[in-house]
Length: 509
Ligand code: 16G
Ligand code: ZN
Image (cartoon, rainbow, N blue to C red; front, side, top):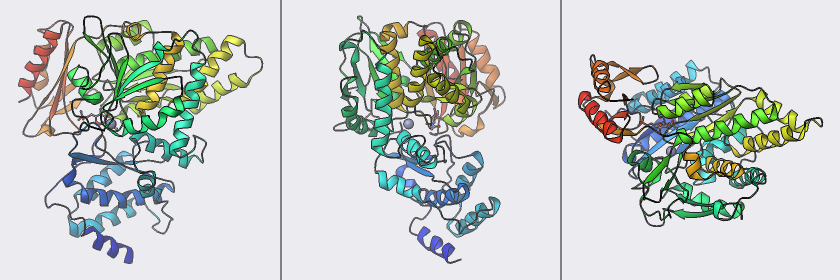
């Protein structure tokens, strides 16, 4: 009981603003940092319970991701580096919203419902993780939690271990790039003035001569995510400020905590070309599918997208590449869940968050092929590349650095320019808008957020607006991270997409 008294006393030092209600959303709690003190304290408690329950190390990530600098956020990371389960998200919300006097009751409720043995040693790596590692990117923490809980099988749970694992795999991959000139090894990176920039600086030494990075928005001057970063580039469809690139050169942007990445270039007419999460998943899945064929491996590969995926990408994957595509709700956990149903699940949100999951069986088959002395040369080469691809990927979570290394390796191996990659299919012009409404929860969606079921009449209104445009599509959904409703529209021309997005946003009011 003494425990609970201490908790109760300490929690008074982190009082909850009365009446403040927050929900554990797609990416944990996220709001203005000044409202988060009590949340941080309470999530520490919950992480400890989660650790006792799973008898494993749990991660606590404090980050604002792509949000403005004054925001902050916190989320819990489960033993294999994934997001906590829905039940525990529910506990998080309850705990966060309990008034001071009810906090202990809320805690006891979790303990009882989950039958937690309170005397079980809490591997409170949770808090150590953050303090011990100091500042790391979101994906690095996910990676380390996974290493810690797989007894090092996944890699060494240190910052150096992470750099070394990824860069080694990258070297093994780029060995297969014949004819790659020094020019082609150059990449401009916009670090969004976030932690990714700091970590990439540290990692540069490991990449030696295989990748020449010019880093912009490295945090030395600008504000976090302000006019830069993956979200800005994707939504505004223009280059980040501060980035200087010649026509045709490759550039990419991370978001503030480096779990998203998008690529781009400007052409000779100074037109900006964006290669977003859809282009990335197409590149990766095509690469993997070709390798599977060369290796003679029969493994089920699929791509998971969300409603934001450009229809051209879906059509290309399904019709040309014959890769099955699944659509899920926005939020990494949904995509991840769907991706786990395949031997190889490539999942990316259009905003650049994504990774690839390999089933244990898939990894074993690849391994066997590499080790089998009777594997013929072509199959073996493909199997070795597949194995190194597995190693360069951060399967725990979408990771800008790991995705960047994989993309760079694929382009090098294929001898492909960014223009050639871009030309695989042509995006339908699209537009995203956000609308402030009184209560965004009045909007409820179905069919992986592609249709609105409430308020009544909204979907019918969208349908009739869509009909006025060619090759058009539009949907609305309440944001999980901001108090707004998001509107997406795509159509045959940019003008059409812009008009449709605007018209639909009026229908939302
Ligand atoms: C969070 C999600 C991201 C999603 C975004 C949508 C995670 C780790 N992150 O950042 O996947 O795209 O929310 O934001 O799940 P929205 O609901 O505000 O549009
Ligand atoms: Zn992020």
